[in-house]
Amino acid sequence: MQLPNTFESLIEEANQLDLYRKLILQLNKDFLLANIDLDFHEEVLPSSLKLLLHETVYKLIQEKFTEYLNLLYIIDVPEKAVKALNGDDTLKLSENVSFLILKREWQKVWFKHKYS
Image 1: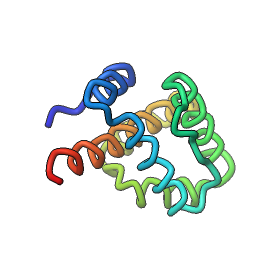
Image 2 (image 1 turned 120 degrees about the vertical axis):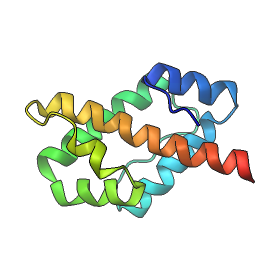
Image 3 (image 1 turned 135 degrees about the horizontal axis):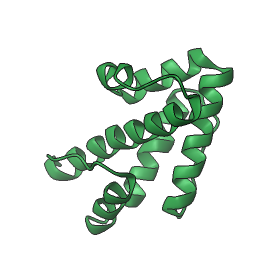
């Protein structure tokens, strides 16, 4: 499996395979497991999804760092990928982490679809 390199390509691939809704459901499931109050509507536009996820990750980094780490653990975002990011700019960091979250969630959805 070749993971998308951009948010747009990830969403395009999800839509092509008709898995965008399942991606949203997987995000909702993992955020609920992490006890983070974020529930995306199944019909959320990709632009809104990106904005809300970025905003939530930013707030978690700034105000609830332990919950942020717990979310990354539950979603199973590769630690090496997070450590490779530049942490000097929190806004840019949260945007990059949001994409890592989406990529990992996409991986889960894609594998479930492919092998079930």
